[in-house]
Structures are given as C-alpha cells and as structure tokens.
Amino acid sequence: MNYWMQRLGMAVLLLFAVSALTFGAMNTLGDPLFNILGPAADDRDNPESLKQIEAAEAEFHLDKPLPERYVRWLGDFVTGDMGPQFSKTGEPPVTDLIKERLPRSVMLLVMAQLLATMIAIPWSLWSASKANRPADKISTFSTFLIIALPNFALGVILKYVFAIKLSWFPQTFNATDPFLSRVWQMFLPALTIALPAAAVYQRLLRTDLITTLQEDFILMARSKGVSKNSVLFRHALRPSLFSFVTVFGINTGALIGGSLIAETIFRVPGLGSAIVEAVATEDFPVVLAIVMIIATAFVLVNVVVDVVYSIIDPRVRR
Image (cartoon, rainbow, N blue to C red):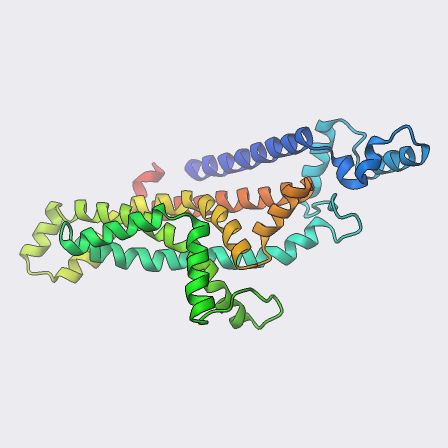
C-alpha cells in the first residue's frame, strides 16, 4: 500500500508543479490583455479603451495578483471549467474546444502505440533469433534509418506514396465521416508516429532477448528439446520485457510531440494542431489546458507501466 501511495503522491506533485510552472511562464512571457483586446490594451490614455481594459481585467480577473489567479484557475480546472479563449473572444470556451479535439488525439495515440507494439515485438523476436546474421544486420540498418528519419519527412513520404500516388488512404481527415472511415483516415498519421517508436522498441527488446537467450534456463529448455518458437515466446519474451515496458511509458511524451507533426501533415484537427494555433496567438488558457491534459496522460500511462512492472516482477513493490 505504501508503494502505491508514494506513486500517487508523486503523480499529484508532478501535475501540480507542471501547472504552476506553465501558468507562471505563460503569464510572464505574454500579455493576456493584449490577446483579448488587441492594440487597445496599450491605449490607456483613451477613455473608451480604458473602460474596455478595466472591464476585461474585471471579467478575466487580470486585476488580481498572479498567485490568486493561479489558485482560481486551478480550482476551476479541477472542476472541469477551463475558462474562455483569450484570442477568440466570443468563441466556445476552452472546455468545449477540448471536448471536440481530445477524442481524435486519443484515437491517434492509441492507434500509434498499438501499431508500434504490434510491429516491434514480432520484429524483435525474428531479429533476435537471427542475431549477427545478414538478416539481423539488414534489420539493424532499417531500425537506424527509421530512427534517424525526422517525423515530418517520414509523414510526407508515407502521404506521397500511399495517399497521393497509390490512393490507398485519404489525404486528409474528415470529422463528419462514419467511425470506421475515420479510423482508416487515421492509419497513416498513426503509422507516422508508430514507426520511429517501433524501431526504438525493437532495438531494446532485441538486445534483451539476445541476453536472455544465453541464460542457463533457456539452454536447459533447449537441451530438453523445446522448439525454437516455444523458447522465444514462452521462455525468453517475458523476462526481456522490462526495458520495453519502461520505454513504452517514457516514450508517450515523444509520441505526443510526434502527433503535432502528424496532425499538421494529415490535417487532423486534434489537440496537436490546437496547441500550435494557441502558441502562435499566445492564447494561454488553451495552452494551459492542453499542457495539463498531456501531463496527466503521461502520468497515467506511467502509473499503468508501474502496475505492469509489479505484475511482471512483484519484487518492485517491496
């Protein structure tokens, strides 16, 4: 119980630190009043502009000290109220924007992690079974090539080959299409994010598998006549998964970063494109909300990773 309480306390502390740092940074680097009123925010000598400034300061609590504004924002955020959009006065509140965009980004990241896992595990098993042979060397070259290729270049190549030249996939995402059509439209963006992750997973899992295959219990299983596939799947895979599970959790942040590029290339209106627009217009309520959602997702994924750890090896809870 103490182990899980410590993990929960660390997760809450981490989210609190992220929210405080991001809130402070956004208010220090930008002028919220300028986002709301435009050039009129600097025209305090004009009585009409001054009225607008005072009204905006009162409405958005900008006349209050920064710590008080932070506590107010945090209290609203935990109850689901993410405030108004500063750069688009009159537009739906941030909560509505998040409700519209979040499901698409979640679908994209889930598909990307599933694809990366489905590619990496069989690839690692095959490569480890042929360690140091020509096939393994070609596999190693392929992984380094994918890792070295920037996400945007990979996305452009996939779009040009499979969407433009071969027309196997649509070039853009249509939010009004049926669910299965949207899943199909998400395949290439998800593959753009998944391939580099799969290459990293493959490198780690292949190395651990090769080490495990040299352990005494594996040699004993082979001496008893256990088949090659059974040795790989039943005896070697599970003890080799620690590094894979660790990177799976940590890599979530990198996948979220990759989704910004994939959403832009394939025109998927998700959180990635929303935060790019919000940063460009310094709309800090939108940036804050998306940063907190990303941080929460990162923390939750790593809590799940801890659970998987404890299942693979109960000694980590001691």
